[in-house]
Length: 189
Image (cartoon, rainbow, N blue to C red; front, top):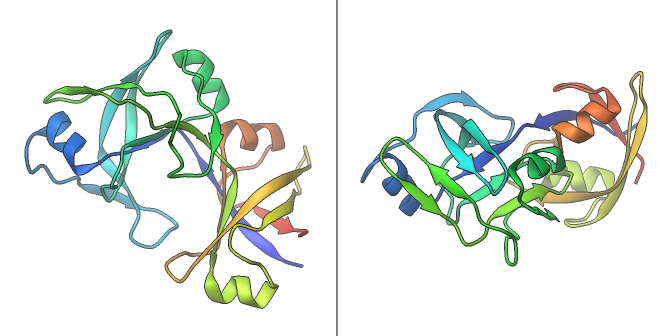
């Protein structure tokens, strides 16, 4: 049985250096509040507000370290509340996506794009992927056992020497399947 831990991703934002400078002040350094499942990734102490056509979320957690491009990851439910038609996309694939207004303590910025509903995926260390015969970008079926069992289709395999084994789903998907951080899912292939 090929079991992977489940990580539930609540709404969060990745910021570019340029946007950190605008939102927090020139040269500002994010503070690590808590390490995440992926090596070198962390939840920052800092938060920002995001404002869409219909609504606003205060205290959206920033995930570090800084990225080359700003990206807001939300659920479909969040997209309705904000009034932003965020498509389901793989992280980093932001071309043609909507933008958002971001407000920090030192300033604000309106992005041209970067708002997505992150496609469900599993991070595989290269050795795990090789052991299970899984290739980067392969689409997988994954079964979650719970009081509301679900088989997730089209789960993207992301393979790298810098990843740790972890399945990422958003809060809508986790609630539908009645799963929480640390629960196990079975890769069916």
